[in-house]
Length: 317
Image (cartoon, rainbow, N blue to C red; front, side):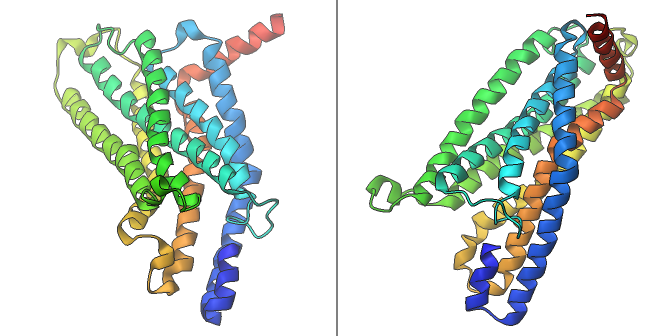
């Protein structure tokens, strides 16, 4: 790994051995992900999208959000092998990429993370609306499709706002406008607040409302239009899994924002540990691209029926 080469010249043999050990562990984790998690995520995300889009009539509001997350998962699947096969993650790297590729990967990663987090958040809020007002059309499939479109648009706009800081951090300081914006910590702070703090508060608020609805006995509890009870378990599991997998990554952004660039930390002894934890946290974020469709496949009992109908239609044709 490139960081170990720096330590070989500048630091003690103990720090260099520690960095080498971290590099080996990270290389093994990356290899396992590419051999197991990557193909599973790719197959199950495509399967989730194809099965639901081929049964549009029977799609529900949660199905639309999970399709949206599956599309974002496919984008992560495209980014993952490019990053994991570079020298940042593995000793046996296949290539090195320049700043332009780095910026492109960062944009795609940030857009995917925002889409996944906000799809999960709005799924929680729409589930509450459906529980509280089951006869309303506020959380209908039609409206949800438009909401998902706005999610992608908002994610792109938000990513490009922080993109300016990243771009100016990688180009020549001769440009006066960019030299004043060379602050990667500011970009991380934007992503931390918009990509994690806001969704976390919104999900917490939605769950408080849902728990209040569940405790109150109303005539609407027997309404036939209410969502399948298994959706509640799927919602709870998806929210927990997403925040467990994404929280470490956003914590590393918080550390980078508060402590400043690691290269300027006076005690360089902690640099290998920081970079190791940052890479592991990104691996966990990539893992959400296969954890979500697998969970949807296991916990949504309507998925098997949709898949069987699709297979029967293919056999007939």
